[in-house]
Amino acid sequence: MLFHGLSAFPITPADAAGRVDTDALGGLLKRIDKAGADSVGLLGSTGSYMYLSRAEKRRAIETAADCLGGRTPVIVGVGALRTDESIALARDARDAGAQGLLLAPVSYTPLSDNEVFEHFSAVAAATDLPLCVYNNPGTTHFSISNALLARLSAIPSIVAVKNPALPAADMPAAHRATLDSVPAGFAVGYSGDWLVTEAILAGGAAWYSVIAGILPEPCVKLMRAAENGDRAEVERINALFEPFWALFRELSSYRVVHAVANLLELSAYDPPRPIFPLSPADRQRVKAALDVLAAV
Image (cartoon, rainbow, N blue to C red; front, top):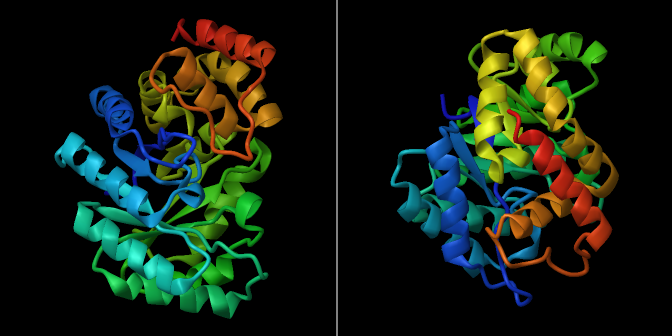
């Protein structure tokens, strides 16, 4: 059941030199644990995995393992440009106390299906940890088709996929098509916070959430309503999130959650350069969105 339910993806607070603030990270993790999320997604896109050194990633994982003590399982992103680097990161995650792995097909030179398959095969074989396929074409520029996913799902330790959610009208058919491509019990979950409620109502196993990493309590309420099929409650809570969804679409979720962390005094750090923090005017819009969400 590792890749089921609400997986909260926190930022990884770090200074301008990429040094992780483990105290600030611990504070975020404690909020997630207290709220009752089903897992932590550490070092995902929201967690700046492409902006941190191997040593700093290891420090972040060790912090999570110490802070959570196994109460909330930790899924660690191990994407890298080179296969040997991803293998090393997977072994670091295992040794530092992770319970699962999340792997995206990161690339500079465009990859073929066979190259991605061999990459995943090698990383999956490097540890005995269960692995989730991270299908994130918006950042990797590679889309994992159902045909490729079917091949990957035959590898014993690959047990889940994190797919981008689709518009509501397309979601039920797309979810059924994915389920038809994988073995029974393979966990098909979704990201894309502003679309994901329909994916869960359609039967998605997991919500891999950006905003749950910084605002876990209202996200737990939204997820439990979706899991229970309570459409009226889902629509009520989701409407209160809509100011955030609009900001995510316009400004990127990555920039917005860093601003939330600053406003709530959970992190003193901006996103890593070359990414700019939000302007003062946009931070006011984030503050207004927080005020709306207080009604949950």
